[in-house]
Every structure is written in structure tokens, then in C-alpha cells.
Length: 227
Image 1 (cartoon, rainbow, N blue to C red):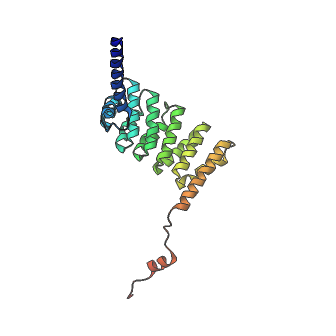
Image 2: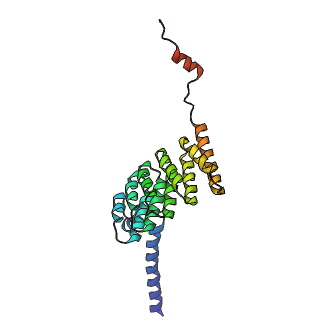
Image 3: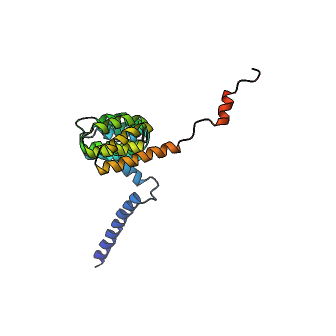
């Protein structure tokens, strides 16, 4: 009986040690100890390490690297995420695209636009690219998105492209959006186009007035004294 009692005490003590180790690992009071060591081993310690893991043969490791880069969220992560846009695994490509939109750096704009027009990029990926471009809202992408909107026969992609133009809110695109709205019987396109036009109008209204007042204009036109 005494031996069984002693064995039970040892087992409980061992379980306690293991439990404490997991508690330290997952608690917020770890202060960079076991949790940080776990993160460094499992996900990499910094952008350079996560970038290196994008070349790992295991797509799960590459996807984890993309997640880490996206959560980092700095401009240093943009270039590796752009590389991940060419990954062989679609999950990796799509997640990289989503994070590029979340980070919102115009550095990603040219390559996202390029992928938008590639023939081998599928419908789902093009939707995600358009959403990412809308989140970045880089005015330089407005014209290519207009071209995409005008040339696609896919009404869903056209709708997403118009939504993206509303997010970018570049005033020069308004006539094209109006034309797209007025030339279709698709109720979804009409609604999204109307919303996009309203976003552009609101942006124009909110822009600071750069025109000189009448008094300022008179001062500008007044001849210098002594003449």
C-alpha cells in the first residue's frame, strides 16, 4: 500500500512539472522564455528567417512563413510576400495576396497588377488581387483596374473591379464607372457602381480647397508698389 501511495505521489509530481512547462509556454507571463524559444523554433525569429522558409519543400512550412510575414506587417515583409505570390501552392499564393492588401504598401501594386492580367491566374485569385488593390488604394493602379473592368466578360470580376475603383476613389475613373453602370442590366453591378461613384464624390468634397479666395487673388494680381 505504501509503495502504491509513493508511486502516485511521484506521478502527480511529474504531471505537475509537465503542466507547469506548458503553462509557461502558453501563458502571457512567460516574459520571452519558453514561448519565445518555441516561436523561434516553430516559425522563425525574424523576417529573414521567414523569408528563407519560403523555399522549404513542405507547403505547410511555407504557409506558416507567410502567416508570420503577414503578422509582422512591416514593409520588410512586402518583398518576401510578393515572392510567395508565385508559390506552387495556391493556399500560399492567396494568403500572401491577402496579407499584401492588409499591409497596404504601394510597393506591392505593380506586381499585383501584373498578376491580375496573367492568363494562368484563376478567378478566385483575381478576386483576391482586386480586393488587395482596393485595400492598398494606390492611385497609380486605377487605370489598369479600369482596363480590367472594361475588358473582362466575367460579371462577378467586373463587380469586384468596380468595388476596387470605389476604394481607390480616383476622380478620373468616375466616367468609366458611370458608363459601366449605365450599360448593364445587372443589378449588382449597378449598386456597386453607384456606391463607387458616391465614394469618389465624397472624396472630392472632402479634399481641401486649393483655390485662392478673392482677396488672395487680388493680392496676387496687384502690381508691385512703386509702379
